[in-house]
Image (cartoon, rainbow, N blue to C red):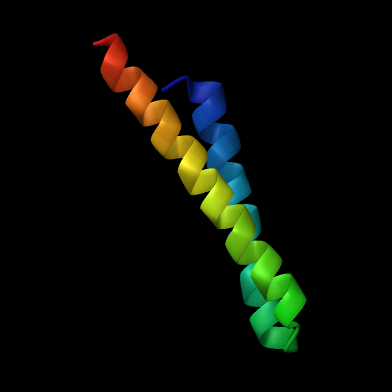
Length: 57
């Protein structure tokens, strides 16, 4: 996987985890849900990149 894309996706995953944790701590369900959604998107993008890398080899 391209290092730049991998780092970007990992950053989005971490950002989502922070939002989810903050939402839980504050009792803010909306923020918690947004965090989970960001993590899911980042995971999907990472999976897609891994699949592309597998096809190249």
